[in-house]
Image (cartoon, rainbow over all chains, first blue to last red; front, side, top):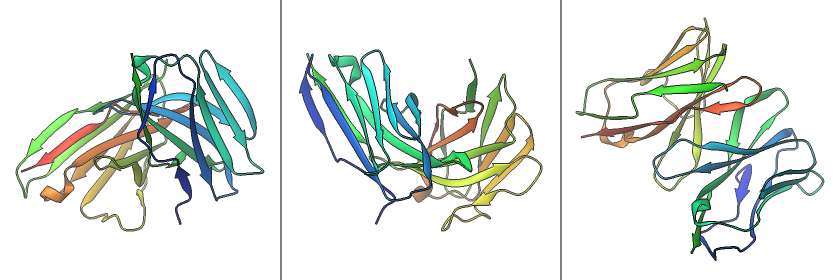
Amino acid sequence: QKEVEQDPGPLSVPEGAIVSLNCTYSNSAFQYFMWYRQYSRKGPELLMYTYSSGNKEDGRFTAQVDKSSKYISLFIRDSQPSDSATYLCAMSSNTNAGKSTFGDGTTLTVKP
Amino acid sequence: GAVVSQHPSRVICKSGTSVKIECRSLDFQATTMFWYRQFPKQSLMLMATSNEGSKATYEQGVEKDKFLINHASLTLSTLTVTSAHPEDSSFYICSAVDSLVRFGSGTRLTVV
């Protein structure tokens, strides 16, 4: 069983829709939770970063972490065609924040 | 802001030759850097942790004699793919941590 499981895609939504991306994990040592956006043939770009449980909002993006359920989510409001990309969740432990374990990614297409 | 620069962005080499990929932290020092590999439509898999002034730590299944890592300064880590074969063709990405995890833009290696 993988340490991090991400909802498989692909996901296709109309412009303006609310998008929900989700990951579950099994390692209780994970304390840092990240969401990355990756465009084709590019390196991942950090979108959201959360330490421990809770919610974090940044513009149209909201990240939620529920450590009791080992479940994290990324919500995108008013989705735009430019949001079309692969979204990766990633997690790391307190002792080594740079050593991340990634989900397999969800490819999102927002249609105009 | 803090940036991780990776070079080259793309490289094509002949089977049996060696290829060096550089990862530099700009504007910050990184005693530790991380090397990931990403196959098409798959997630990032950690290959090794590069430690300044000491030996790299390799993940299980990664051949240390094939993927040579040198972290000679606080701002530079290099990954050399030795005797490259077509199955080594992949997207290689490095990362380093200042206050957040920063990823390079990746190197697409094609071995022909």
